[in-house]
Image 1 (tube, one colour):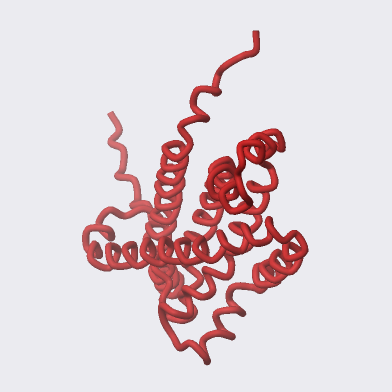
Image 2: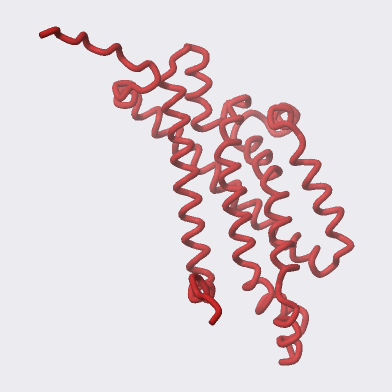
Length: 228
């Protein structure tokens, strides 16, 4: 019986690389997670009042979305390079860029969610004596939660990918491993960082979706129901 030769090692996947560089991988992953979460948190804190203000004052919607759209169209490499001379090399520069890119998605979804509230619900609230502020915080924002959560999910997944570009200013999380792998032509390092980015994006997306379902318990009873 012929003896099969051992298969050559796969250059793209190496558990040996993972075990030998566990500390570097852990540090890069922690940096990536913290950058993503901090950027989304800051962008959400900025976007929520902007979207609400644009809803209350429709004439501001165009300028707000237009400004956010211009920031979104700037290439990430160019934006980080422009910011670096003023904000330095490192975390601050990357955070500013990430927040700028997340704003368009978040502001737009906040505004769309508020505008999409059923007019009958608004009329019923006004009939119950709700003022404009109470209507916004007590009726419109809760009704807009599913759309806002969808925007947060999209912005988060996008941010996970954009963090890697921060390597141009020396603070790119898993992008550091990718860049190092490209320079040394070490495929296993590139693939490890890529897989971790994908897993991180999936975990964050599912977590935010679960939080969204927890914030909107009234939507669960309508799923799977059919009109009689």
